[in-house]
Image: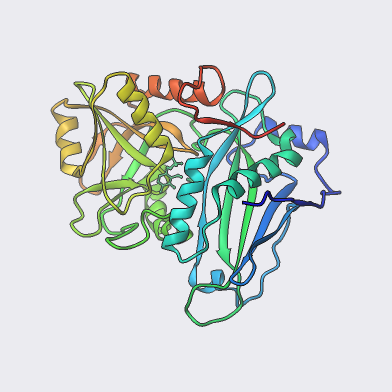
Length: 362
Ligand code: PLP
Ligand code: COI
């Protein structure tokens, strides 16, 4: 595959070092974007072409662009971590690249070669490296995305597509940091269904989750838990994170379903747990199993996991007629030790024996 030569158009209005440092000191979660973005065009005739680094700013689209009408869009999320020696690394980007390809296949978008995905991340870091923060628990969140930009109103896959990478500095996704979160159980709204797009990282899944997310906020919760749309009994995942339950014998259980996003954080954590000798089960789990298991003491911890959330303990599930756990639950031991192990690898504090880290600078 030909190497990409990015055309570089640098941002003359880039933030000053002082402005940038002020943002990095309190980044929130992607409240600000870096100075640049990367884009690569695709057309049915020309394939992938015109790779560019350009100033971060508005995208010009025709009002008839496919994405604005039929939602033909996919995205990824991964983080750039600054290690103690100043170098910049990301975590399992090949897995994100392959998931982007799987999402593309589902949404009738073209597949971006893995090499191009990796090159696009490095290209952005080559101009925005100063935006990777170094304070504990901070990172630069990278957001690659792709959409149909062809202007037409017939319903068919777009013949012109754009791929971009933008990035924003990130602290904790939840305002309370790693404190246990309360989760609202959505009993009326589903996120995805059989044969649908639940396993793809596509904007529509998140749009479908927003009304339930609003219910969560109204009920004092930070995230929403979805059940399967067919029987309304099986646990699927949160609006933006996977779920793992910890049993008292040390077994970890995570829901298995073809309408769940296959999380890279979840896969990594479960591998670390298996290497510690824990049994890991990927199988259907009902909300009744969770409720009964918590009540009889079989289930001792639960956590949410994903790139944005890292590993966040679940303190309470709140449903219309019942609760599991309590809002002032304390973070579980297994949850926190797996979190430490994973973040130690990501921040370069522990040897990367799996070859998961990928250097983005230099
Ligand atoms: N599930 C959903 C719906 C998500 O948005 C995410 C975040 O990307 C995840 C799960 C976790 O995936 P990952 O660990 O690859 O970030
Ligand atoms: C991620 O973790 O990368 C996501 O896309 C989830 C979202 C809540 C930001």
